[in-house]
Image (cartoon, rainbow, N blue to C red; front, side, top):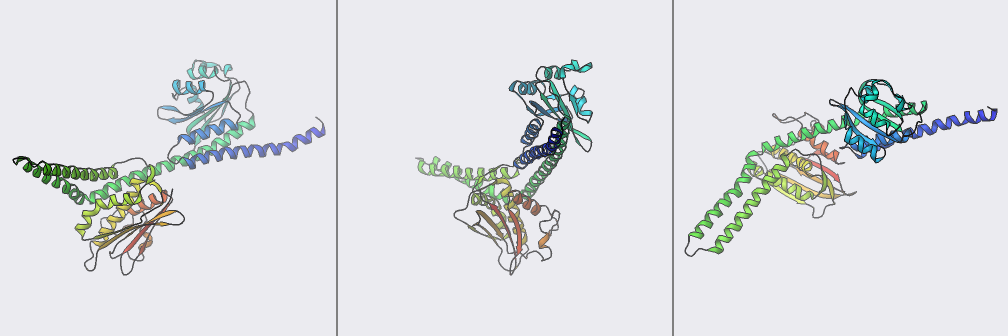
Length: 428
């Protein structure tokens, strides 16, 4: 090798390293982007990890399997359509004692320059037999978290073209970072699921406090329908029957049963446990539905409800049930705060307004005694409560819901008394 050639090779090595690092960071960035864009769905994250791995190592195909109790479950696969179809139909789950299962337990990368040269009991493995027909060179890397196996990435080339030591090292570094990102996503998902379960329990508990009022809301239209039905029977018994009056009574029965159905539907939507679903919501209509459920409770508590809803609001995209849960919590809290007021008016004010930049602000104000100044900053802390029988989770859950919608929830004391809760949600 001449001196000039040697100098050129030495000069190119730092450039090659820079290129490798850029490719590695690009691969990780794509995984992180998938995580950011898919907070509730892991599949795009699995796909991004595998796409990045195959591209990073110049592979023709690859698969990502996760370790589960039943074996190695196929989470993502890349390659020509025949490879993808065969992997999904024939090998969706592999036994832990299979060839890939044993490779995973090795906890180290396994490089096979030529699959057809495999010897020993591997030759009888059905996956190996199928793999030999599709590609020749393979690289397998277990995914580890705290030395615990969580999955296995396999990549391959159609021709006998061994992976270089640099590619294997690059693949290992990428896989380590991808595993960390995957674990963070898994923990965040577990947190969201726990929060959803807690939010559901909070909705059910809050609805339980309104049992008497809800029963009254249902009993009213049922009683009215019974009265109209009795009247219709009397009109039919007359000679001749007063059919016009009968028709009017039956129309009223239809209206009252529809009202009952609406009340039951609203209760069902709030109690039922469903996954988060964002949609364009008529904010004023959603608030009116909740206030209708609490109307009887307000009457029983002697509270006057004043509504000031803006005529035109920007479009917002949110989970309707979660938003109504926030309103339900704030309204019930306000009614309870005013139940002990003996002098002065008991008034609940609910308002909506447009705010800039495009968004909406909802306010719920009561005329209760109001929180002590020192307790105001702690109202949204988990397990902090000013009620003798409270759990201190309602407002904490409400803040989590609003923040998940990129909004803000806060409280301020009012003069001469009362508390004002406000939350904002950006427009769609």
